[in-house]
Structure formats: structure tokens, C-alpha cells
Length: 336
Image (tube, rainbow, N blue to C red; front, top):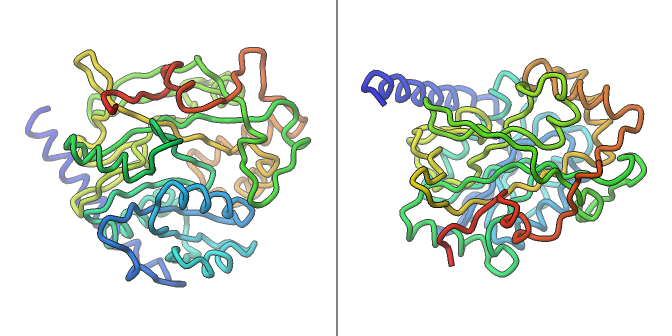
């Protein structure tokens, strides 16, 4: 990478940090318990809206995994989300009525919170429908992973977003609060993925899965990116650029081995496709606050309104992380 490119990326990072500072003025503190954060706590950062139904399992999942504190931004919920989170002793909550799109889809708000509270901590960025799965997650807490990453001198950990879905019409299997969503959304596409390297940012760009197969079949190049770097040992010099798909400095995105081996990686099990998706799609189409004029939600609305089944004869039923490693969707690398 040339010197001029380095300067451009450094300038871009400074712009992101300055945007985060400016956009922090849009946040209002609902409850701040960050004085309870301990030096070695893994922190979870989330932006959300109207997710009261999903929150009990989300919090339970990551508490059991070992997350020490949740720092969350509520963007105008009116379903009791903020009231519920306010009562959780390990949650600090900020609220805003400002534009989600105008904050780079929440990136600016979370960049600020990570700058202020996440420095020197391992920080996980996850939506409430994303569940991190890493090697040995069934027997080792999250801090075992972060301790090992520290011992290897690694500053970031990647996870591919894996879209999960039910068999049969989505509306036929209602989701209830506190339920494990993967009791319903137990299936995934195992093989139809493509990847290419982004020479500027250094990350791998991954596309495929059910959203490309079904929702973006006529324009596969517009399918959502599935590559994420959700877990980072944060520094005040860092900034996410596009969701958690890529970060600056670009070395955080080099989460793969191009010398013939494999670096340890995980999967974010994505529980978007529950029966709540239709109401969510309608709401987001009215708000118009999502990427590319809410193109994804428009596709969901058009495809799912008539009871489309996402399952096909090539769908694979989820078993555990070892199955995903065998399929090449994640790797334990040299973590023994």
C-alpha cells in the first residue's frame, strides 16, 4: 500500500472519529452504569429499535457467554424496549430520536461509545438478532477466546454472518419472548458463498446464503455482505467504517491467513427470519432509514407476504460449531 493511500485511510479514520464525537450530541443518557465495568470485562455494543420481544434471550445468551456489560442505543422504540433495558443491572442505555441513516446506520453512535468506554477492552458489536459462535463455545467462555487472542497478539476476530431460517412458512411458527430462536430457525445454506478481497481495506467480502439465493436472485451482486469483524480489542484510534463489516486501521480487517494456513474465526448465527420479520419490514419501509433506500426490507416484503418458504432441498439443519467448521464456514485455526 502506497504512502498516499495510507494518508487517505488515516484521514478517513480521523473523519469517522470526528463524526462520532459530533453525533454523540444526539444521544441522551437513560441510565449509565459504566462505573460497574471491570478492567477485564468483555463489552457488548448494540443499536436497536422495538426489540422488546428479542431482548430476554439476547441478554441471556451473551451473559452466559461471559459478556460483562452491555452498552446500548435505543433509536426511538415505542414497544417498551427502553423501559425493559433500564431495569437490567448490567446495561447502560442511551436513547435518541435522531436519524439512523444520518448516523451511518448507528455506526457513529457506537464508535463514540466504544471510544469513551471501550478502550483497552475486548468489544463485541452485535445486533439483537446476531449470536456469536466461536470454536469451543460449548465448553469455553468468551474470555478464554479473548485471552488466547491476546496471547497471539491479535487485535480482532472475524465471524461470518450465517442466515438461519425455519422449514415451512415463517408465520406458521410464532416466536415468544425468551425462546431460543434457533429452535425455530434451525436451517441454513451451507455452500453457496463467494468471497473476494478488498484491496483497499484489506477485508474479505463474502456474499451468498438464503438472502442472495431468494431475495436477491435477480441482482446477486447487491446481496448483503456477510463478512464481519465483530470482536475487537478496542483503542481510541480505531473506528468502524461500515457496520462491523470493516474497520480502520485496515490491519483490523486482516483476519485471514493468505500464506496457506487458517486463522481462527467464528460465525454470527443470524436469527432475522422469524415471524416478526413482516411487521419489521413494514415498519422499516415506512421509516426509510436503512441502507440503499431499505432495499433489503423491500425484498422481504415482496417475497414473504405470500408465505414463501425459505427452506429448500439443499438446506442444512444446524447441529453445532463443529459442523460449521467441517463445512468451512468457521475455523479453530491453531487454537487447541
